Image (cartoon, rainbow, N blue to C red; front, side, top):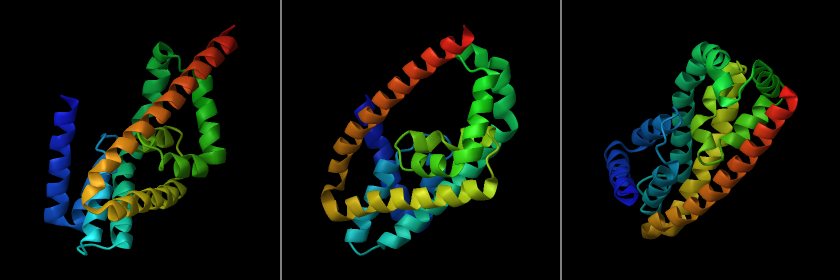
Length: 204
């Protein structure tokens, strides 16, 4: 079922890019950065395949992808900024999020927001949702956009380059990205275990 869904999504992505070119990449990466899990691991490698055919340039697809990421991240940022904190303060206790945790996140983004966004933009899954907590923490908007663009450009360039080198076999890259997802999930589980332990320790 999941494989059929991914195949349908991949076919749609290829259709959008084939018909809209660079504009299609901007659109798709904007959707992916607006907290909607549209896989950039399909978008950019396919665009890279088109680079190998001479239909696009590597710099062009990386630029289009990065611009799309910024465009899609802005709405997600403002949703977090205007609605995230009140909801988190009201319902956070049900998912082990306290006001102290929110203050800690605010402080982390205030001190290290640039590196959080920069690295987050190059991590599968994390990159899709990172704009929302940045908005909740009210990270400086200019810095948010700049580091979103830089991190996204690097990510899009890497995926595009891989697709370009793989050529007609660009879809084989999905196997490697799926394995990387397991690494991210494993790291997430470890972080969650640490977070729960920390939460109850401070509650004592």
